[in-house]
Amino acid sequence: TWTPENIIDEQVARIRAQVGDKEIICALSGGVDSAVAAALVHKAVGDQLTCVFVDHGLLRAGEAEQVEKDYVAATGIKLKVVDAADRFLGALDGVTDPEDKRKIIGREFIRVFEAAAREVAAAGDVEFLVQGTLYPDVVESGGGTGTANIKSHHNVGGLPDDLQFSLVEPLRTLFKDEVRTLGLQLGLPEVMVWRHPFPGPGLAIRIIGAVSRDRLEVLRVADLIAREELAAAGLERGVWQFPVVLLADVRSVGVQGDGRTYGHPVVLRPVSSEDAMTADWSRLPYDVVARISTRITNEVPEVNRVVLDVTSKPPGTIEWE
Ligand code: XMP
Picture 1 (cartoon, rainbow, N blue to C red):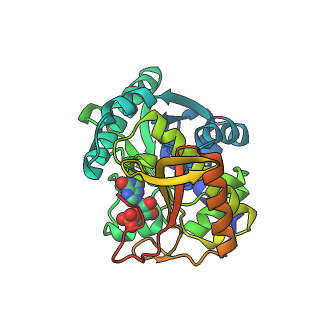
Picture 2 (cartoon, protein in one colour; picture 1 turned 30 degrees about the vertical axis):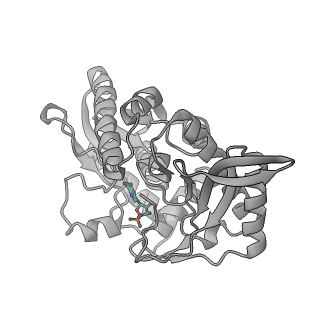
């Protein structure tokens, strides 16, 4: 029978048998899949596991801290943090094309992860790499084993030949809701377990226009307000994702106090979905939308207009880029 305890015991035994006394590494993204996969591996082989968290500076407010502090406190995992924000922002400077942003972020991620993996490998006999592949990913890719297969840039399949690892994929038979149950059972922070799916390239593809530190900060505050109000209304689990998008190259005229403003709009993009292949715009209660709008325009001086995206997928995509 399916109980979280059974699954955990079974996976722990499997991981021990596969890994033996070798070292193993894992790239944490801040997302639930890699967090649960790593926690399982840690339960099985303890400090033979080293996690690497590449902070690309494109996460939402509080998320890097969640990984570095709360997750480590909850699991006792050995974590190597690489603060690579300057490097990513430098590489993204002036770039506006969505696919160029993705390519640059993917390339930089591989380079930074590779350097970190080399350091870990220099200290021990690293043979394995953890990946948080879920059952739907396995099905989508035709069920092959042993090859890296994650859609995002966190796919570390682009590593050079002298740095190849065998994969350990403890979530291969599981669905997302099962992974969440395991995460709770393993004592992970609830905010991580219930985190909405979030794209690997992060906020870079939610800034329409070039990415900069200032623009990221504006978007982070607006995004945090939207998340806070959604949670306060008890609707977090009722939406699939809730991108907040900054139209950084658009300005519109507004009025605030006695003065004219000429600021940027943000778009609220709450969607409901089963699997992100299709989606519908979420009919959030208008009073929740109103509170988000009032707070953003009051608390974020650069933003003077809030608009609601009422497009389904298709024809729209969930993200704006
Ligand atoms: P779209 O925008 O295509 O998104 O409807 C479908 C799902 O994929 C996520 N997404 C990404 N995830 N790297 C990722 O890891 C990406 O480049 C990327 N682009 C979109 C999106 O958040 C949604 O869940």
